[in-house]
Image (tube, rainbow, N blue to C red):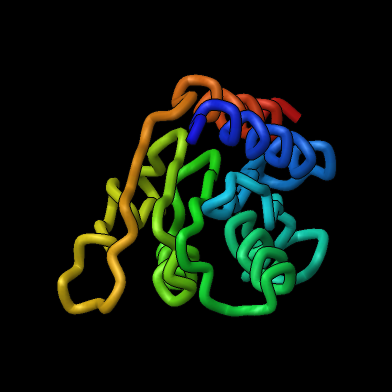
Length: 151
């Protein structure tokens, strides 16, 4: 699987979020046949829904597409490290692999602040891959918040 290709698709989703003044995070879910079955971007503000993170939106779409809440043998690509809520959903959905760009030292639940995928008390442990287009994805977030502060 070409991680860079799918991360670029997630980056395009993140740009959609920034265009509506949402934190630019994008996600794409790919099945074992390398088909995109779900995608999404952050929109908790515009949707008045605190759960409307990119990962959750992509999981919802993928689940509808395959008509199953278990997303077995799938890979989730996301521009920034998933938070606790999103990692919980990833584990419940049984996503096989999570590939993210930039680490999130304030909210990250895959490697930075928490390591939920490694918690032996949980019944599913997705493979975690980080650093795909890390500079590019970090810059998206950084530019967004710099622009916010300058207004």
